Image 1 (cartoon, rainbow, N blue to C red):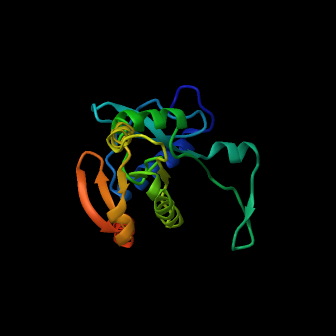
Image 2 (tube, rainbow, N blue to C red):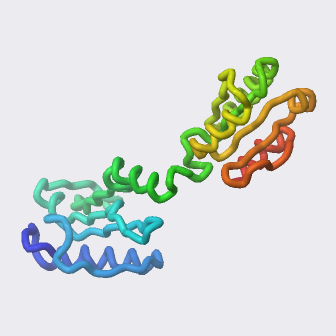
Length: 209
């Protein structure tokens, strides 16, 4: 319990014990930080460990007996009687800017597939295959994936390197063979060439990631 607080010791003990029981029931390891908490009640702080072993306090859950009392909040229960609620203050991520900074540093920009801003980059080999590349983009987008097509008139090797530098999880190369067989040539970040797949097979694979 912090030095500057409101409410009596009994309410703080009930709230603190409730949070401890919740942590134990959920199977989480925890430690008591004596003297911590908001001025109106105890709290659970969630600390995330990054790739360097550093911990960052992000999410928090605070149990508040005091403010409902001070604001004289009431609700009518199933028994028809008036009751005083207990307030829960919850912050899932903490500061969103700090949380995103932690993620970027932790993954060194190589986000997992589900989190990557652009999940798939399509690279048509030449102008002749841009129409088919667009069809692939539309089908992937309609399947719920974040996808872009690199339509620049640059050499294929250059565009592949650019996609790798952006750490995009999947790069699809579209050429004559792919267009004729309604397929795609798949490259995965860090793993390189993964061979040729039918588009429907690739979509099924992505949905199972």
